[in-house]
Length: 288
Length: 290
Image (cartoon, rainbow over all chains, first blue to last red; front, side):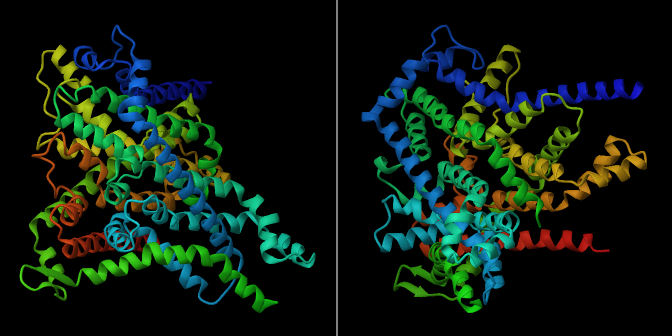
């Protein structure tokens, strides 16, 4: 009896402490939402964590989407294009490769896998500058390929897919399919891929987030604003609004509202695909 | 049959490896090659051997940045991973209520692009319409400038902590969920309480996941770029162009056009990260051996 009340009390204290932390993690997003409902004037004159008298969210959204001939919409579409093609390509390469490393023995397989695994530690930024120089030689700078091609390699994705394939694909299933006379690639596309799907979605999601959030690479690769992804676009608006005073003052409300709009799709994706990113992290984090 | 299957193995891994070589190995090799040359006013680009590296190792702007990131790693990462571990243990404790809400709420910042996170916190820190300054003003106290010399690194650490605590929490929580129940039974027989169980059963059992989060945080700290680059506009005198090693490499390559030296610097940053990661790995491996 006493242990049950003790447990309950402990649960209450813990829940209260966690609520305090939750406020810290959600406060900035709440601020962002509140700020998106204000005119630039109200941003300065009203208290930041509560709404002003005028609720201007819709007019802010309209202004954000139409400013500069709708350049923000363009940025969103660019981000979508870069993120979806990179994530799709990276997941496909990782699925094929991870399955290959998990289920086939060939000369040098361990060394090759070790090389890929070691490259997880290579910082992306050590690569970005030489990649830029190489791309500028072959004329790929200032094209969508400059963002998509480097994002196709996901060593961590390959590692996840290998671990996943090892567990999810029983060898007996492959043997049975071979005895039935199926070819190796037929087996992969007809039998294996379906079983690998949860892992593929996990890698897809991680690469999607990485490309969606990518800033350094597009910052150095692109100087044509109509190719910017939303991250670089918002950063350029913010530096304009910081540099100019009155004339560009209204950009501030656009930066804030644009930030809010750019967050919504990813948060939605995370809420909808919870099952996948959680199972994927289990695979990656627990296995040695 | 065996032989045929060997070739199929190559075919499966070939697409990944081709892109891997083109986008990772070739740029790295090119950076290594570039770093051996130097630009001179007279004579253009000439072979310089390891001159760029010698210059980098005595470049106080680079060394200051590396030292700053080492300090960042030694202060921010323990706080972030300590919080993440605490949250993961709380979620796994069985007595916490609203588990789903906490798990999602703390993880959500990870879905926010770092550009947006930095812009947002920059405004929140700001003196003109940031809620922190407004609150301080209402209470009649003067709020410190959160982006001044004394506070900038801490303010930066706060942004990074906000972004990545939830991500690390989820990795650790997933590892906790995978602990075999037999381990708990033994602890229960010994009469261990919840703290004791956490300390002597749960934490040792998720060692490899903890190690993974340390390594990822190490890589993240030493290549910090987005957050300082965006906060720079709010505090250009404090966060200068060599505040982090990566900012420095960027400004070398694109502002001062010293491409060869920039290649050497980014190569060295990579080397620092790899050496530091292996040090962490070796140190923990040695300790775990009887």
